Image (cartoon, rainbow, N blue to C red; front, side, top):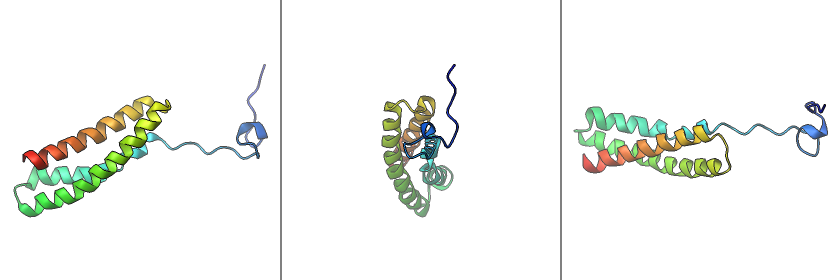
Length: 108
């Protein structure tokens, strides 16, 4: 029977004997929610004030821009077959939050 190579042996990782670092989880691609969440809350609770609307627009634009970058990275990871359920969740979360923010900003 074959056995698994032990960590530190040349067969366990790269050719020079070092082990390969683990790839980070795709759930770390959700960082734009840090901007999208507060922007949506501003619009939801005090969006009738001009300062809240414009603050949400500025903060939200950073979130939408970050979401666009992370959705592209997540789609590439999904195409490679990495963590398909997590990738679908990240894409749905970021696309949904971005669409909701744009809808609230444009539609009022």
